[in-house]
Amino acid sequence: MTYRENTIIAYRHGMPLWTPNVIVDCNVTLQSSVNERYEGQTSGSDEFGVQYTFIPQVGAPIVTPGTEILTDISAWKKQIRFPDVDSYDWEAGSSRDTANWDREKFSVVQLFNGPFERLHALMGFENALIALLEYPSDVFEFFEAFTEYRIKMYKKIAQYYKPDSIMVFDDYGADHSMLLSPDCWRTLIKPHIKKAIDTVHDLGIFYTLHSCGFIRPIFKDIVEMGADAIHPMQYVNDAPALKKEYGRHITFTGGFDNIGILDNPGAEPEDIRKEVRRVLQELAADGSYVAWQTVLSKEARKIFLDEIMQHSAPKMTTAGIEPPDWTTLIQ
Image (tube, rainbow, N blue to C red; front, side, top):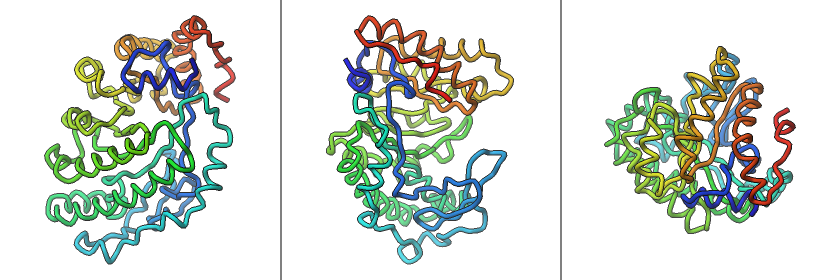
């Protein structure tokens, strides 16, 4: 049994021999040849020409206010130029990005800026929300074209990276509510995500949807679309209740309370350990689960990983797998 095989059991909604976690069991990368989002620490642009500025307090770049490229959604065909997917050096990029991959691990290629995120990156958030309400047919057409563009990328990723899963980022939730109405999402976004999922499945790849915030009102829809896994399944969604209802149809990856505990500077080490134990008990006990969370603090990540591995290492040994020295994995 390899790390990859064990994680695939979880992705098929079964009971793995141990609880996989993203640090030990997975390879994860973006595509270095595709500038989906400026990732520097000053300012720069992405593949569509969107301008970003690094915000130290946030620790990440955000779209620079006042630099919107798409000023009229009804004129998107004139104002937006989709990048030429064939022009990227996929062979060189994939060679760089997978150079340190262990193919006995579960491999994931991530893509930022799904359809909703791309729309508000181009227009600005307020203008994007107005467009959803006032010009739905134009938005639908833009999403349709964007999905075709992305499908070309999925095929290149399948050819050059050969991943087990593609993870697409498209955040629909705020802290305690959705960013758009569930009905609006179902009408304008769901059909295109469904088409993307079907394409990825036709390529023999699992589809992981990353969507932050409160998404419980559309969770049944996400399952119906055929997404194989959901990430990060934040605490506000009552993940244990959703897992009980849908855990045989979709794999949960995450489920931790980041805001209150994992990324809270005031959290004590034992608070972090208790939170990990809670999630393992509530979400991992019956399988269909991968311990995957982004923890900002290096010290918190070490505690997070240590608690998970104390749970998984004995099971790995029983399965004939020698656990790695996980104390060296976070530098």
